[in-house]
Image 1 (cartoon, rainbow, N blue to C red):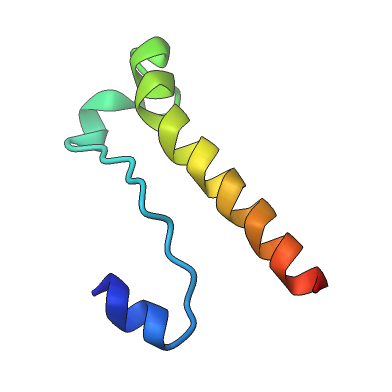
Image 2 (image 1 turned 180 degrees about the vertical axis):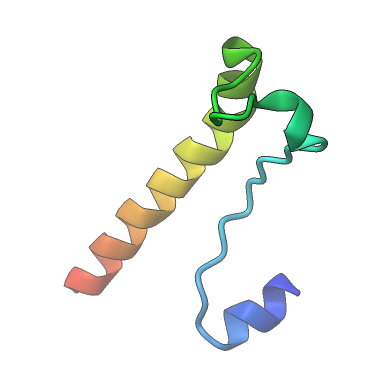
Length: 62
C-alpha cells in the first residue's frame, strides 16, 4: 500500500503508533491511564513524523 501512496505523491510516515484497546488506555476525558507507557509508545512515531514534516518543508523550498 505504501508504494501505491508513493505513486500518487502522498507522504507516508513509516513509523506507527498502535493503540490496541484504546478504550483501556485512556479514561473518559482522554487522559492516559499510564502516561509513561503512552509517551514511550508515541515518542518514536512523533519524532519520525516531525522529521518527515521538516524534510518535506526543505524539499519544497528548492
